[in-house]
Amino acid sequence: MKRIIKTYNTKFWIFLWVLCYLSIFLSIYIYTNNLNTQYFKPIIKQKVNFEIYPNTNYDELINELKKKFNVTDNLFFDSYINKKNIINFKPGRYVLDTLFSFNDIINEIRVPDNRKKAHVNLTFNASNNFDLLVSNYLRSFPIEKNKNFTNSEKTIDSIDVLNAIYKYDYSNYIDVSIDSNLIRALYIPNTYQYHWDFSINEFINTTLYNYDQFWSSKDRINKLNDLNSKWDVNFNPIDVSILASIVYKEAKFEEEYEKIAGLYLNRLDINMKLEADPTVNYAFQQKNGFDTTLNRVYKKHFKIDSKYNTYKYKGLPPAPICIPSKQAIEAVLNAQKHEYLFMCAKVEIDEFNKYIYFPGLHSFSKSYKNHKKYAKDYHYALNKIRDNKIYKICYDDINNCFD
Image 1 (cartoon, rainbow, N blue to C red):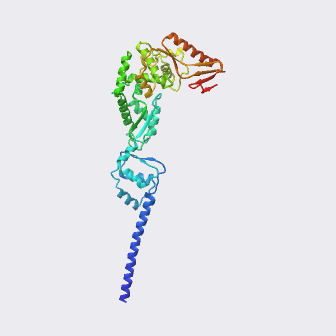
Image 2: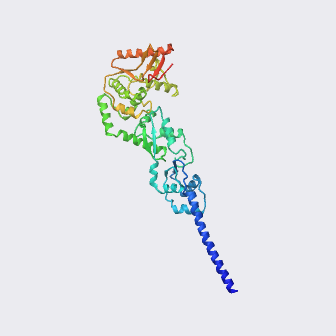
Image 3: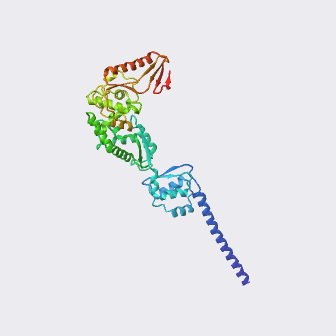
């Protein structure tokens, strides 16, 4: 009997050991299978950014990872994530490539230098105001931030960004009490690189750094000195931007920038009024709203009382009439030295084919007498358009015509 019991006990323990080993192997299989299906299969369908804010703690990061990438919270996850040891993570914007698995994502976060791939390249172009820049800013930077612009508690909008731009302390550059529009001269259109989580003030700081870099260029300093010696003016970088804003608004094509800049400098050189139509339009908009514009400048508009009206006041306007393009700024620095004092929009009238063509360029004159001939042709064409509907009107391109 004892022998039977002993044999039975031996078999029982062998069974238990086999069962135990099977359980272990099964657990390992389930664990590895879980890892393979949850953590190593591709889950990123197209390249995306994953943002970790500066005040995010470890628990918040883990919860965000589980939530964003639909990871099951269980013992397997705890074991897996502990082995990955990402407790010393760094805040930043991480770029997650197509076909990344969850494991790839974790590995990406484990390497702080990977954040360098996630800088923002922000482009802003010449424009009438800051609306375009603000729009690009909101598209490029995280828009959910609290009052300190550090975490996702409050959504900032264009008004917040505009207020920050206009309330920033620019005292090292300009006196905004003279005219707040002087700020436009400090934002030089281009493509710049910023850190992804910059606050609006950090964004402005970097933009001003770019402004300093632009104007500290030895080549530009030499060109500015050369400009002041060629013409009897005493321009600083702000003055260059003010004149560039007029050039930008006056010319349709960059090929005329330097020539028009030289013409305005010639007028300043002999103490003549600039008499620039774009400044009249700006003065009109100041009075009637910036959602309006002058399709045609008449003599009555020359009387608008505004410091921006260069038909009424000598010298430069008090501030830029827009944010000029970088090309217009460079054109002022490279202004052509010539003897022209007058210009008029070019026009061609074809009586046979019945079209009036405005190529978007100018006819330049040294004398007012010659200028009046061009002006007479231009006004004759405008009056023909007004009084006679049989002509086709062509702008910029002879093939770009309409009845």
